[in-house]
Length: 378
Image (cartoon, rainbow, N blue to C red; front, side, top):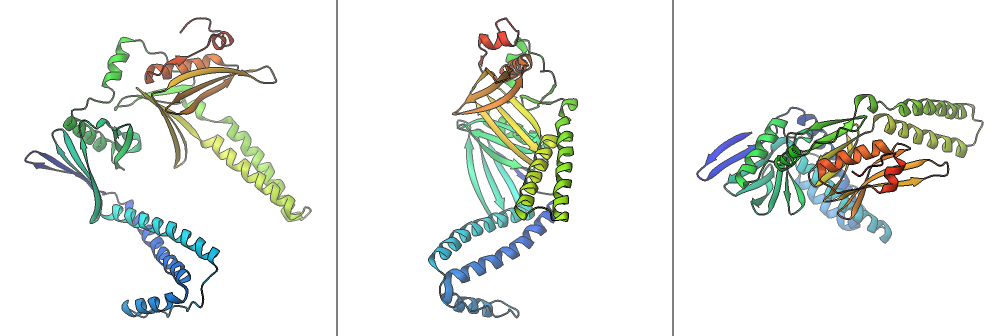
């Protein structure tokens, strides 16, 4: 990061410095070589006989001794040409995206020109880039997400990523600098003032709450709860099924179709085992928004509800069990937060904790409280 003073403000520039980017850049450069071969081959098949003089001309223009390209006689059937055209458009778009990321890794920058009441953001990759002006009236919030190493601005209800891969201390400093220029308060200031006047409900049993510097609470399973016993059980089942499939393959006692069926079942069980053993859910609770994140290794799926309501519902099954379900509804979508069988107190504790930190209205019908043995108004 570099900061340069200006007559009416300052200029902040973020550039990549980690050595980890070089192996990724080397892989992208290697992949782009194959991408170029695929581009030329697909174009040759699309153009048919028209491609021969073009390829010959490129061969003469390029330095070095290049092999003579194969001749293409006649045009392919139109269904094949249509498929190649669609494939080539996607392939070209993917290659351009890879080129952009390669330039971002080697010569990328995020440039912020900060002035009172506004700032200009330019996201560049080498000599290429785009810029955008942010003014105080249109930006409603600007905050850092240290856990995800990024800075985000909320403009007219839409979140715009300003910087990614940013160290936590740099992200928080940059967000505070941009908020100061726009005259925005700290994201958690209003929530902290309101929370100070009301006693917060306790953290639900089996969960751990972590306050965030930018405001809000990150709720996740307690360490002892995050160890999924079901993952161990599914591992044993997967091993037994895998051994059975291996026995079928070696002995040759079953047909290929039966063996393939058991192999597919084994793969499904293995994937379910990995999901149960390693998937981790967390909930981010902020004033006016609630999001659920499911992470498995480097992969993450996130869903968010804004300006919503919380509702606890009760349903039964054929065995006479009571199922308690907590859902968040808002902005045309619904998100299931918790579901337990014959354990309404846990779901209600989760609901009250989420309602307090998000400000969402909470709807708990009387029949739910009766089934949960909580006969009081909340």
